[in-house]
Image (cartoon, rainbow, N blue to C red; front, side, top):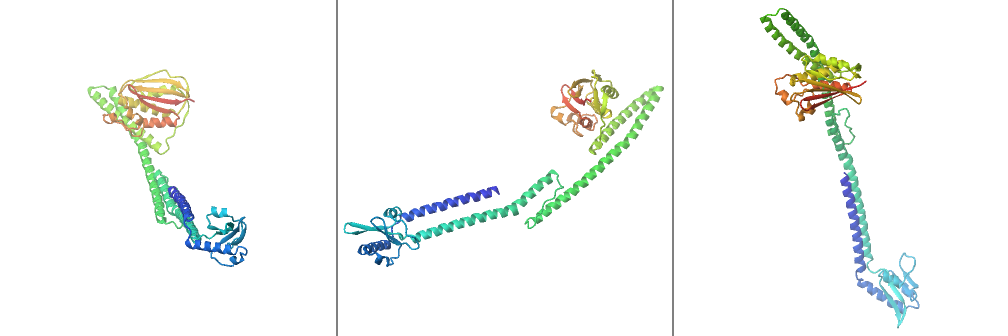
Amino acid sequence: MKNYFRVIFALAVLFVIGIGAFAFFTLNSITASKLASDTVVVLNDLTQDCEENWDDLSVVSEVDYGVSYVVLDSSNGVRIDARPGVIAGRMTVETAIKNRYPYQYVTRGDQILGAVVIIDDGRAEVREARMTILAALCVTGIVIVVGAYIFGLYVKKNIVAPFSRMEEFAGKVAEGNLDEPLKMERDNMFGVFTESFDIMREELSASRARELELQKKERELVASLSHDLKTPITGIKLTTELLKAKHEMNPTPESMTEIEKLNNIYEKADEMDVLVNDLFAATLNDLGEFTVNCKDEESGVISEIIKHYDDKSLVNEGEIPQVIINVDVKRLGQVIGNIITNSYKYAGTKIDISYELIEGFLQMVIRDFGPGVPQDELSLVANKFYRGKSWRESDQSGNGLGLYIANTLMLKMNGELIPESRDGFIVTLLIPLS
């Protein structure tokens, strides 16, 4: 609509310029035109009568010549002023020449007695028509401009504004804002569309509410099943350990075979246990119930956590600074355990762990010497359910939740997890100090 009003303004300016040009050229045309022949005749008759009756011009003033005129004496004094409705005023021959009024000197022999100036030069009707045309053009232009402006306001209020509101409403719906209704106005020609849009918003809002409710129930079901699975898995692991201990007490060739089978069962049960734990943790996080309870702990608890998860004795731990950290020990154990488990599974090399104090954090660097992660996948490794291409093509099982959960827990503990790939896979943990 801004462009529309600019066009109206431009047209108004052009119309004013056109009227000005018309007035200028018609004025010049009227001024430059020749006198009508009847005006010349009247001027000659009036001059002759003045010459004959100069001593008593009352005779002349009683005659109707059909024109407005002024009779001047030799000193530009007014002898007769026959301008209807005009108060006698200053008129000279010079003024007549300047205004191009027809005039003629009154003479007697070689003596100039005065002059006759005709005010009505025969073009009064032309001038009057010209002024009428100019007035008509001005009024027409004003009516057109005002009408176009009013029409523009009408279009803006009843067409453009409703469309703009519907466009803004559609943008809010696209952004997921379904709580704000679409304003409806009386006498809106798009009332039916407006109502339909608002009905659509209500249906989408109800549909989203149903979807969120179903998702919540689904996650609650997964969390419940994950929790319930932990008990039988723990039972399988304990039973396997008991049977393994029984065979180890009475070793025979047959028992060695049984021990190997029991080891395989235990490993699979342990993988299931890790999977169920990760799935349970991820589901709790989705439900907003995955909480951490941070408190001050000595940094030595990190070494205890590493010993608990380093069942293959592949970790070479550097000296840890003796500081107080603010963490949830159980959750920090999940973070470090997931990282070490990943290195066991995908690298199978030794694992170096080093420490350094930086401003406000204990920096813990965990590094293996496996194939690492491609640089284009590095920013994705902490995403939920993401597994790298090389890992997906390998025979290693996994769920893509380990680093996701580790990263989530570090953020909840006001720390940070930074993955790198440089001569192996490196995970840097920034553990907040007390």
